[in-house]
Amino acid sequence: MDKTAVSAETYVPVDSDFRLKNNADEIALDANFAAQGFWRDVFIRYVRKTSAVIGFFLIVIIGIMAIIGPGMNEYTYSGQELSQKNLAPRIPGIEKTGIFDGSETMSTTTGSKKVNHYEENGLDDVYYWFGSDMFGRDIWTRTWEGARVSLIIAIAAAVIDMLIGMSYGLISGYYGGKTDIIMQRCLEVANGIPRLVVVTLLLLVLQPGMVTIVIALMLTEWIGMSRIARAEMLKLKEQEFVLASRTLGAGSFFIIFKEILPNIIGPIITQVMFSIPTAIFTEAFLSFVGLGIPVPQCSLGSLISEGFNSFTTHPYQIIPPIVVMALLMLSFNLVADGLREALDPKMKEM
Image 1: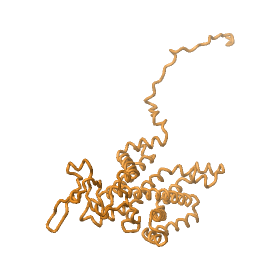
Image 2: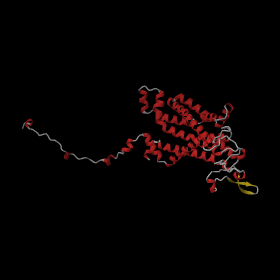
Image 3: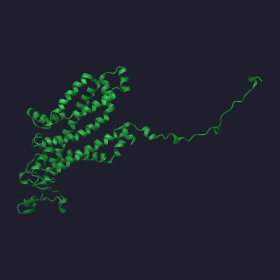
Image 4: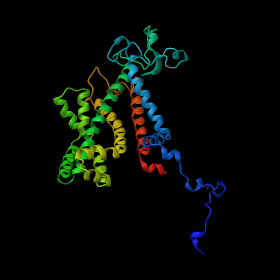
C-alpha cells in the first residue's frame, strides 16, 4: 500500500490528556530564602541572637545618655562647689522611699553611723543624682561627659586603625614576595614596642588630651587588623574572580579595594567591633595612671582614678563610671560576637 495514499487525521490534544505532577515535596525549595539578599540574611541571623540585640540596645542607650546626659541638670562637668563636696546620691521623688535620700554610712573609730550632709548643711533643694565628688562636682554630669569622651576616643581610634591596618594588610598580602617580607618585618618591630612607651614618648612631644590618646591608639592598635586583612587576602587573591579581573585589565588598586575588600567585609567589621572595647579599656588605663585626659576634662578612666582615691570613705563615687564602662565593654563584645556569627556564611548550615 502506498503510504502517501494514507490520509491521517490530525489529532488535537485535550486537557484530559495531561496530568499535573505535584512535586513540591521533591523540590523542597525555600522561596523566601532564595529571594532574600545577603545583608537581609545577616540581619535575620543577628536579631535571632538575644545577647547581641541586648548589647546593641545597651550601646544605643549609653550613647544617647552620653549626648543628653550632661545637659539634664543645671551642673557642668567642671563646675565646683566646695560647700557641697562628698554628697551622697539624692534623687527627687525617690528620696521619700528611703532610697537615694542623700544619706550614707560613715565608718569612724567608734563604729559606723548614718549621716545626711544635705540635712546637716540645710541643702533641702539640692540634688545630686549620682552624688558629688571631693571638689563638689556633679558625678552624674561628669560620668556621662566621661562616657562621651571615651566613646569618641574609642570609635575614632577604631576607625583609623581599620583604615590603616586594613590597607596595610591588603597591600602586603596582595603583592607578596619581598614587599610582604619587608612590610611584615616592620609590623613585627611596631608590635614589639610597648604601648605605654609609645604614649610616654608622645606626651614628651604633644600635650596630653584626646588627640594624643587617639594617636597613641592609632600607632599600636592597627596590627591585629592588618594581620586579619593579610590572611584574607592570601586566601582570596588566587581565586577565579580575581584572575578574571586581572585578565580583563583591572589594575591592582581596583582588584584590592573593589574586588577583594567587599568579600572580606565581614571579618573586618567584626574586628572593628572587638577593637572598640579594647580601645575603651586602653584609654581608661592611660587615664587611670595619669597619662590620659587632663583636668578639668574627664573620661571614664580618670573618673575611676578619682573615685579610687576615696573608695574607702565614699564608695558611691567610683560605682557610676565603673558600671558604665563595664556595660560598654560588655555590650560591644556581645555585638561583635553576634556580628561574627551573622556574617559567617557557614552559620547558615547550623
